[in-house]
Image 1 (cartoon, rainbow, N blue to C red):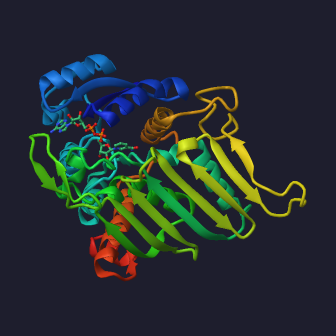
Image 2 (image 1 turned 45 degrees about the vertical axis):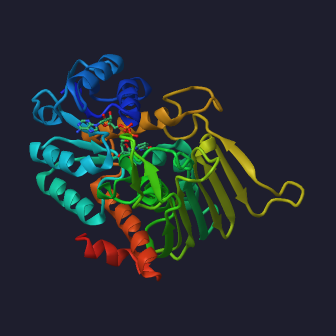
Image 3 (image 1 turned 60 degrees about the horizontal axis):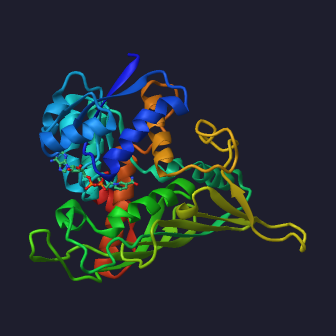
Amino acid sequence: MNRLNIGLIGSGFMGRSHALAWRASGSTSPLDVTPHLELLADVDAATAGKAAAGFGFARSTGDWEALVADPAVDLVDVTTPNILHAPMCRAVIAAGKPLYCEKPLAPDARTAFALAREAEAAGVPTFVGFNYLRNPLTELAREIVQSGEIGEVWNFRGIHAEDYMTDPKSLWTWRLDPKGGAGAVADLGSHIISLARYVVGPIERLCADVDTVVAERPTREGGRRPVEVDDQARALVRFANGAKGTIEASWVATGRKMYLAFELVGSKGSICLNMERMNELKLYVTGRSPVTDGWIEIPSTPAHKDYAGFIPAPGHQLGFNDIKTIEVAEIVRTLTGAAGQRVPDFREAAEIQATVDAILLSAKSGGWVSVDGVAKDAGR
Ligand SMILES: NC(=O)c1ccc[n+]([C@@H]2O[C@H](COP(=O)([O-])OP(=O)(O)OC[C@H]3O[C@@H](n4cnc5c(N)ncnc54)[C@H](O)[C@@H]3O)[C@@H](O)[C@H]2O)c1
């Protein structure tokens, strides 16, 4: 196989980003096979045809099941609304093809663990789009923590806040469909949970509160529909390694556009990373002289993992679609055996989902909840 034929389902925000990433991946890093934009599916033939022409796909279809069954498609990439992930993933697993799905994987941990088990039983490699883990400076933060440079991690303060649902006149969309899972805590909270797990480790217990601040929203058809999912969530968390912290998620954070950030406090130093400034990592280490004591700001440079494939010069900055490109290149390397798996698989996505479910359960019960217990109850 010298080419990997991609079948992409969905051509919205993420569909476009994935198409750009697949196209760029071969030119930013050496790959044993070249991703090829083979077939794109969307809700109907016209939508799919238009997107396929724009994105550079060879063929298009209005029938996603035909895409999954198409013998020329080697890997299926699912970028549709959350509620469609499980049925689409099940069809791909049945077809035995490598599978890349956007986050959140499923509406709940039970479905996510079931998908993980089904894929494992079928021997299907799986990948989920927690792309912020692929920011070279996220990797740096993890390396600094693992090296012991900032000592024992004492506190993680993490947040993913945006404001795209602040306006009560914003339409009711698929993101508010309770059949697709939770609200902001699944849509955005899953990203900060994935970062917390990647940099600090698993969350053992948590105590959470969630609420809905816009009770109903207008529908596209001219009516109004109640909002049954959370707009904002916050949790006190305790990590398995003893670290403590907080996790917040909100899509009604007036003024915030992409505030996915964490501040990590250790016994010998601290780290801040904010994806609104994803090319700057702030580091504080103890032991400097009183006259130079303070934070240092580290720009992303070719010395950081995956940066050099894009730009040979330091400080020239990567963006969202670049970290998506790193993610898909890593998927290709995993599939060809050129590297171990760095992109989260369905099992890791199910663990993240169990943390989301634990937040909802705690908010309902009003007490501390064991994430491990939630995962076990969900069939881990
Ligand atoms: N990783 C990230 O940073 C990130 C960012 C945004 C969205 N997402 C995730 O990506 C997924 C898609 O979000 P989006 O913002 O791109 O949504 P979107 O609404 O912009 O796009 C969804 C696409 O799916 C298509 N679609 C819907 N039903 C379909 C069907 N039955 N068959 C084929 N195509 C169908 C739509 O026509 C559209 O092209 C969601 O799961 C979301 O959570 C991830």
